[in-house]
Image (cartoon, rainbow, N blue to C red; front, top):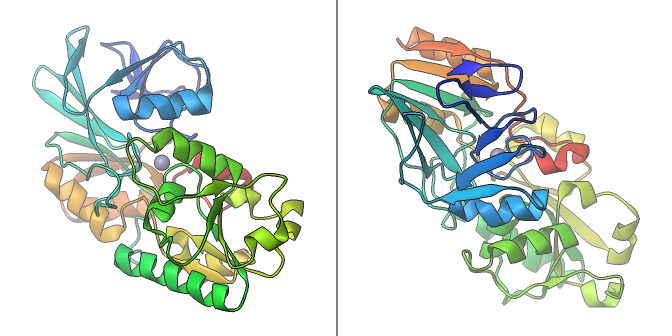
Length: 332
Ligand SMILES: [Zn+2]
């Protein structure tokens, strides 16, 4: 496996893993825009990711493969294994003459209840993200966070305020939606969130929700919860809401700087990436000797691993991990 200007390249099979420039054949770990880019001639991905990629990228040539099934290209064996990141997300295992490499794409260790949980895969070399690869990142219990969100909504409703809950339209939004308590009130989604959720509704159970339309009125939305992506959290349409309280769900909400950067009323610490203990547990579980860090706190995490005895290094990629800026909304 080589790191080239187009992406992570397996020369023997002539395929790229999550390439960031257009290529002939791309193996795609999951549907976020920094991993699944437009313009490849052929896409191969885990089968639950096929409808997501078609929704995002339109008419593409794509093959879906179930988790655990081996496919062979020029004597190189490939398979997809759950990464627990978002629906359809997979680690990509690559084997040739007994040597095994695993590429994580993005992953999280703790099950979210809507995505098949992370499966440790033994390998010699582990190519891993480390978006949250410093010790300060240690996630709270996600169930407590979902309870906090429902309590926040109920409190806002008592004050006749609309609750504007912000989360990325692919993955985070469906996780938030799944755990909202419809007994509190009515749930609306922004169009981008609603359309993506419809793509997944045969795989994930959702409470009843309506997609916002130009006809939805201020009166309709009083006391309701509106689920929207970060890019929609600013703009003229907010005038529709009347009095509202905004909440943002992201791993970055653990840091005071990130909370301050956004004009939000309430922060919820919820991420689809591994925290520091999760990253370490994943590396250990693979029983690998070599680690290559691709995005996030790459140098710090690689250095820590070297001190602990791994042969670890960083390679430059175009992956972005969990980003906060509104203009990069689709990258998550
Ligand atoms: Zn991702």
